[in-house]
Length: 311
Image (cartoon, rainbow, N blue to C red; front, side):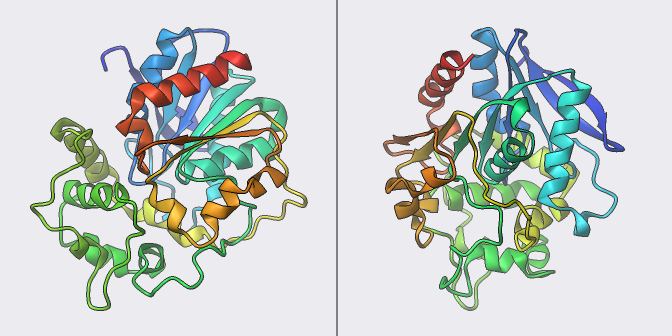
């Protein structure tokens, strides 16, 4: 980790924390999901830098070591999009490869839709391109569905507030590492779904857990609950959304996202290519939602091949 440098860059009136390593004519920007942070990309950043590229992994506003937004309750995905483009400007990066995980996927794709000339290619993990409108794949899931619970003002705050930040992140990592969608029973909260004795996934160390815990202890969960969960309903008026740049989707075969109604067929049938015609989809055997941390060597190779073939 010593080769990763850290700095703060002022963007849209906020200081964003940026982890960076490597130099070279091509840059790769990594966009984390939840409950992740810049650190989620530690393996990929070093691999990209060692291959001769510049690797950048910011914490979004309100996440990790970045400043919180002035009004977290009004923050939207588009704020994150505009922050990332402004960050590229501040770092004097005219064109970039984007790598997005989880809700970093819609951020990456929105940047590619709104600023296509700035993007060399897009790689997403765990979440395919979805048209920029309120999601419909949640319909029909029970009341205890984790996103429904976290969208409800005050519900997650009360649930999470019973534990320290490290335990909250630990529990979510355990839940999201499974192949089933987290759905709590009628009289249970999401945090109650994990027994204290449940071990962490074998690829996630106590040191990793301590790093995540400290970063979320600093930031809290206010912005993280707002974006993505409480801002999903906002409609973005982008007629005929089509991403023309080269793209790759990496899905772990055991990723719980496949269990969302309609998602597996949307990906495997190739329907997603209606919106992303130049998409290649890779399935990682035994891979979970955290495939880049679980199988870093495999993901690194896929990523480097994609970048080198299009650079």
